[in-house]
Image (tube, rainbow, N blue to C red; front, side, top):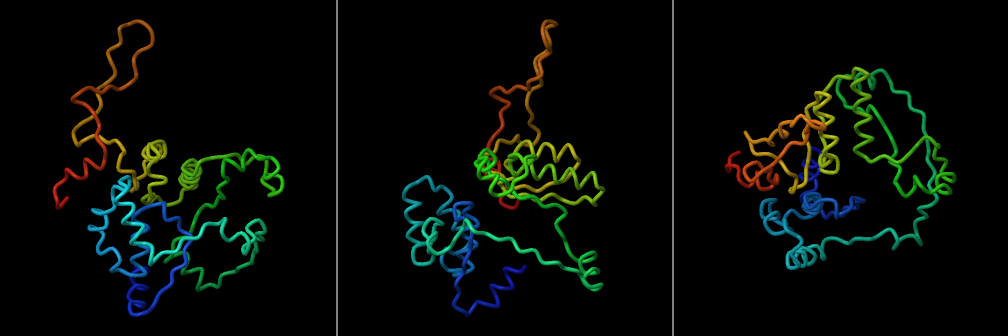
Amino acid sequence: MIANTLKQALAQKNKLLLTATPLQNSLLELFGLISFIDERAFGDLKSFREQFSNLNQDQALGILKARLKPICHRTLRRQVTAYVPFTQRFPILEEFTPEESEDRLYIHHASLPVAYRMYLPQVWSTDAARRRKAGVPEEIVFKTKPEIALEQIRGACEAGIARGVVLMDAGYGSDTRLRANLGALGLTYVAGIMPNTSVWMPGMAPLPPKKWSGQGRPPKLIRRDAKHRPISVKSLALGLPAKA
């Protein structure tokens, strides 16, 4: 909604968009950013996907780079270290006491984060000198972003916060353990996933474990055979009716 409002308001204006979004994250993010500058650069989303969805092809990648060249200028961090002192960052905290009208707005009409946690990269977690210099507490260990998210969601459930739908991009949605644990918590979720994610066709499921022979441990592994195999979610989507 905000993006569309800005797009309409700036339709006849020259635009310069400065963003720290890594362009390699997602082709759809790239399409959205470039379309904000010039919606004619790639045409509609359907034609963009048809042209560039398979970027392991050198020709498609070359065309994409050529199309981006007059529109997009990418600067890497190492190219600006002479001008921006990344190692000297000073957090500034400002006390804020909301007025009564702001309290009503936040409580009844707005969404607010219920948990915060700074992500500690694995390379930092094992670097004692860097941890000491940055003041990282000893009890903070490396955890993946999906692991952090699951802890926060569990905490929100235990605190009795009203349950809603969990929305995740592919960075989180591709984590099978996270999806399974959300299901175990009884939460509904909508997740972005990678096109090669394996899924079962409607009505299909793995074969049950083999019957126990009476010796050793009872089998627990589910099975597959030529007729019981998952497919990629991309194949499933392409096989759906056009109006699905």
